[in-house]
Every structure is written in structure tokens, then in C-alpha cells.
Image 1 (cartoon, helix red, strand yellow):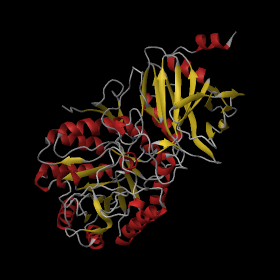
Image 2 (spheres, one colour):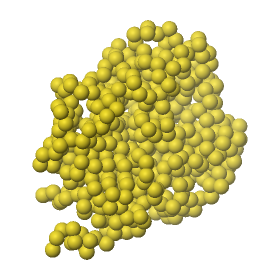
Image 3 (cartoon, helix red, strand yellow):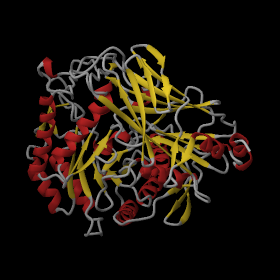
Image 4 (cartoon, one colour):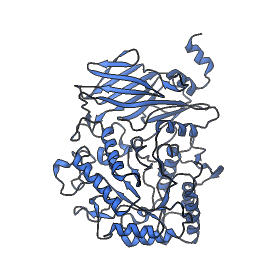
Length: 556
């Protein structure tokens, strides 16, 4: 019997047929993806089809794409000694049946828009794609820490993987070196396994060595009631207020000082989101070492927020990244992360935070400062065309990875790092925590419902497989209805993921205090991961499995 007919007879679902056609079993009973039917490379604006040899070597002029099998992955290696390399695309032919749903990830944070889709035309699925019909799940992705920015595309007759090798807005100049662009990995759902748990297991395969907190992380953050209008006294007051509600003395919560503490730029006085020097406090705070000690004395662990690529208002032009759309305001100069002097400055900031005594640092805005775009604007390309950093020999993915590695090295082993607006797949295994979605709100419930609930539902598979997945804060204020916020508080507190509460003192009445006390007690301990039971049909799931019981929420 021909194999083609055997598959049709033995595989009864679209996902199973797809998986069987595109993968093969290795000697260790692990599946790996087949050799692609086509390989293309982009240099400048032109795409060229490569000529294949034995399914593992593909060439065009002096561009060489080599596929190498290693354990459960297929490595993609690229050489292009004389031509700029913008991207590589691998294509597998198949037939996708119309009843199929698929789920992709986001480049960095998500924006309330993750869902199981049915229409695949012109959809980019960053990093991985999960394909499901009513009975079976098939997973295709790249391992975390890739040296290219990757996405998957589906059509009725093909599966494609694009590996973006731009260096800024131009193609990378590799010279004599070979780029290990990515490692492709696959998995199939097990009998009786839900798509959620298949996705989570696959995330564990994509990130074999996550760097995780020693205990569950929870605590407070001032942003969603202070919004940058914070101070030494306010942080001390709110820390003392919330510390009264802590019952677990074996796992202390964090008190994270958000934007507003660092030395202001004279071009943007009072702007906490853009600062002149992140190694010096402004007059509202004065002594950050003293504040760290005050937080510890109150029973919490001190943390703070920073923006690593902020340049000083009078920075030397030679240290700055080129001005591009989204990164062209003269009041917001950005450091070029490929210049060693700038990396040393960032590492110095973290040395200072260690000397001050901070146990956690949340760094923000680096993807936007590198690309000039938020993740939701990366539809046609990651950044504007026609520019590059000082060092064009590295891909954007490598430049980002080097920045993360420098932060990790400077932070050492005793400080937790939260990446916010970080490239999710590149930060996994490097930072203990990741802010997985766009901002929730202390002003608008609709924003928390959109960003928070959607983010948590669709990125919880990454929790404790990539990092601790931070779905963002409960903005507990008088502007947000308590009947909605208490549900969001419960979901976070019983999800197993980090819980951070941003509580306006005036909004913390008797009922709220009791709920926060219970939430802290739950979040401090190890729990089973929450599962959104209706996530395949609802972008803001209302039915959840929490601690082995089904809970229905009314998000309104």
C-alpha cells in the first residue's frame, strides 16, 4: 500500500494527517519535521529559491542553508559571506482541511487579541503555531533563544516558517560566520490530552532550561494608582498597608517601585517613563538604599522598574541609535545596544541596584526602543526598513539576546528579573519572569478585561515552562468596579502565575482587605496551573479550572 493512501486510511483527523505528512519518527520515538519542499532566501528586497541537495543542503550563489538533525530538533544554519541576508523561508506542502483551528503566539507582549483562528490568510504566527481540529492537536515551533525572529504561516496547501535575519532594518552582514538561525521542533497531542495541556507540554519542549523563581512570586506595585506620581513616603505607606495582609512568612511578597523614582530628564520633567539616569533617584525618593531597607523591615522584598536603553538628554550622538519612525523624538534619545560602552552603562545600573539591596528589577520598553514598534504594529515587518545599528554583523535577534545576557550577567543569581516589552521567545530561559501582556488598568475595567483575561488565558501554557508568566496587576482603585476586580484578583491568585496588586489606599475597605489577604495566601503557595476551559471559542474565557474545580466568571 502506498504511504499516501495509508495516511488517508489510518489518520482520521486533519491535525493528525498534517502531523503525519510533515514529520517522521526518530530512532528514539521522537518526532522531527521532514525536509522542506522549498527553501527561499531574501537578500535586499529580492527573494530567491535555493537548489536542494539530499534534503539537507540548499544553495543560491554563495548563500547556503544547511539543515542538521539534533535530538528532537532540526537546526537551521545559514551562511551568506558576501550578500546581505534579510530572511530565510522554509516551505512544506500539505492540504489543510477547512474545519481546522490554529493558535500562534506574539512577538513580545500580547495585546488582548490572541485567539484560536480559522482564517489563515496573511496571518503571522510568531514563534509557534498550534493546529487543532475537533480531535487532535499538532504543534510546530522553534526552540527559545533563536538567533532569528521566527514566524509560521499557514495556507490551504502549505506550512511555512520564516526566519527574519535583519539587522535593524537592513539585512545582516554575516561575513565568514555561519548563523545558527533556529531549531525547529514539533509535537503531537497525546490521547486524552486537552489542547491547553498539549500546548503547555510543547512550550516545555521549546524551552528545555527555563530559569524560574525559587518560590511563587506575588506582591504589590504602585503604577495603577500612582501612574508615576509616586514618592518615598507613598511607597513606604502602601507597603506597610499591604504588609498587614500577608500571612505567609516563608515566602515574602515583593513591593515593586514602578516608574517615577529615577532622575528626570530636563526635557521631560516629571515624566517617569523617560529618565536621564537610572542609577540616580530624583528628589521625591533621594535614598533608594534606605527605601529598600524600609521595605524589608516592613516584611516585603524590594523591587524596582527601569528602562535600560534610555539615553541622557545630552548624550553623545555617537552612542545613539539611528532615528527611525517611532524612535525619532529628540526628547527620547535611545542608546545603541551594539556599542559596548552602552552595555557597560546598563550593567552598571544593575550593579547599583544590587548595592542598594533590591531583590527584583523590572526592565521595560526594550523591544520598542530597539525596533520603534509595539508588537501589534509588527504586521508587515519588525521595524522600519533601511537602517541598522553600529554593528551590522549581528541579527536583531542576536542583538536583543546580547542585551538580555548582559542584564542577566549584571543581575547575578540572587536578583529576579522581570522582562516587560521583551521578546518572549528570546527572554525565556534568561529571566525568571515575563510580563506577558499589555497594561491592565486602574482606570478602565474594559482594558483589564481585554488585556488581562485574554493574556492570561492564552499565555498560561508558558508559565513555568518559559518563565513565571506575569499577567499584570489588579488595579484596585475606586475607578474600577469591585465586583469585576475581585474576580480578576481571584483568577490571578488561583492561577499559579504571579499576582501583583496595585492598591489605591482609599479603595481598600474591609471587604477588599479580606479578599487581598486570601489572595496573598493563595498566591504564596504552589498551586496547579489554571486552565481556561472555553478558550477555543472565547477570547476572554469565563469558565476556568482553578485548583481542580470549575469556576465561572462574569467579566461583563
